[in-house]
Amino acid sequence: MNIQVKSSNGITQVSLDAKLLTERKVFIEGEITSETANEFMKQIMLLNTEDIAKPIDVLVNSCGGEINAGLLMYDVIQASKAPIRMFCTGRAYSMAAVLFAGGNHGRYMLPHSELMIHEPLLGNKVGGNASSIKSISEKLMAERKRMNKILAQHTGKTVSEISRATEYDHYFSAEESVKFGLADKIVSFTALMGG
Image (cartoon, rainbow, N blue to C red; front, top):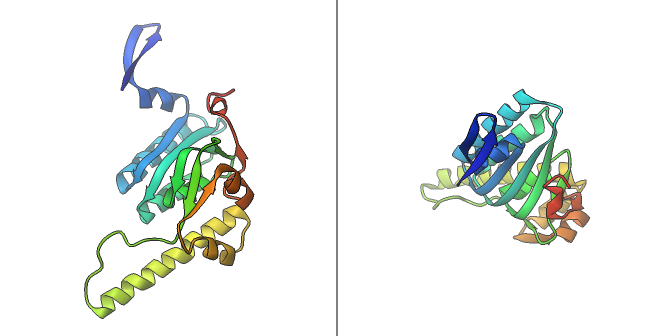
């Protein structure tokens, strides 16, 4: 979608995403893939080169996706010199919930938004010999341990508490998310607008 922007040179057509990026708004939406992770990394790099003191607002509305792609995004969030404020604007499930919970400069949820955490899932059909299946199982258990450790670090819960919470698809309302330590505060939409 394009919008019209007035400047001293007249009226210019720019994409809505580009306009919002100039206002330091970055979106994690749809499935988390290596492509979306690379795009996210580029946007955060650009905003860090422009100003490391001014906050970046990351708006999350995603059902999750690839673990490796999500971990790249997590590393970017953790390393950003510019403070990153996380906003859940609908749902943050699976890897998206881990990214949201990993915010260090405010984790805000709109009143009717929702989080969901669970154990890592196999992304495709399992096949192969017994050794291959054993290797896949070991990798999945290692990923589970890593995800639980990250969530424990950002929630103040123990790894065993997180392990119990992720044994099944565990949904949290905005209020439950704050109580569990996945979020800091419930805010209205006007908070996103700077109000």
